[in-house]
Length: 201
Image 1 (cartoon, rainbow, N blue to C red):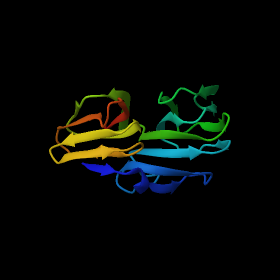
Image 2 (image 1 turned 120 degrees about the vertical axis):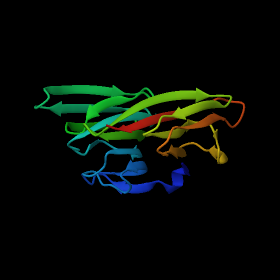
Image 3 (image 1 turned 135 degrees about the vertical axis):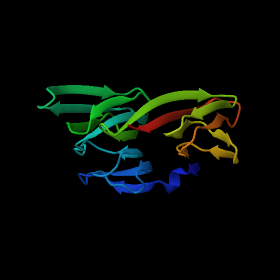
């Protein structure tokens, strides 16, 4: 288990060289796009751009800040040709990394959360929850939990003590055995977290 501060997220170029993402967590450690089983990152998108083609990866994208973005998705192999507007904060949208994707920003820059898993090797479940009083979060054996602070300050509790999570900080719970932590708001206003449960298949 470790606390990962937003300022410590590693800056990783997009595969197509058109942008930079800030990596929250990846497995195996330090793996690149061709070798990773799963990957969680935060990305700022300032202007219209094509996304990287990431064969074999399944993607989920959540709007964190900004007015939104419009994705044009195409795949002859999967008979896909659609346009999707994403303007509801923290609502996951799933698509395949194999597809051709053009992104247009809506009225200015946006920031997004990316979750990628290698098809057939790993899976991710995403939940957005509000926390007031401390609530337990149980991680199953063999699963990894990434909890990212997405609104308001949160306090994380565990056998190791307590830690404050500021906006965009995260906690990585990756012990092999089942583990329980707790999250609660650090003040009188509820805080929100994106909970990402990652499992190798």
